[in-house]
Amino acid sequence: MRAEREQEFREFAAARALWLRRSAYLLCGDWHLAEDLVQNTLLKLYRAWKRVDMSTVDAYARKVLFRAWLDESRRPWRRAERHDGSLPETGDDTADPAAAGLRAGDRELLLRALSEVPPKQRAVLVLRYWEDLSIAEVAVAIGCSEGTVKSQASRGLENLRAAITKSDPDLVRTTAMRSE
Image: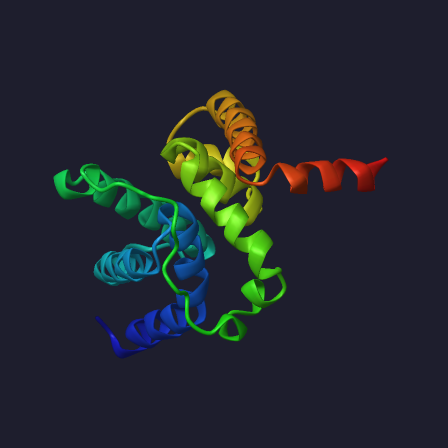
């Protein structure tokens, strides 16, 4: 790879690593696996860097990350893993500006509830509402129709609400009282 293209890749990787890590964590719910997914994503991007269209590099990176997560979740040893709902320590919350803005309890509740949402619905929710992609962009990233994205988002939100209600019914009552 030419030195200028390699420098472009280094700048991209430095600028987007945290963004990719956050997205990967929202998909898998495990910081260590998220870091592995980012490493796999960056490796695959590096191999294809000279063919990548710079105008759509973020969308391409998102698609590579999503596919790396799907590949990882299909591995036999991942299927046997059980999620008990307890989250590992995440380290210093102040190091992540997005996490610092959320209250710790609400953040843990949301992440725990998100981990209970089925994988495809979780991916749609992360891409649609965290990454703030349009329905068409999510459909391209996942490789499905726009109607499927809409239905998966709707079902995913229902499942997310149900998981939150199951975990913390008081939060639902408090939110309902505030909106009245």
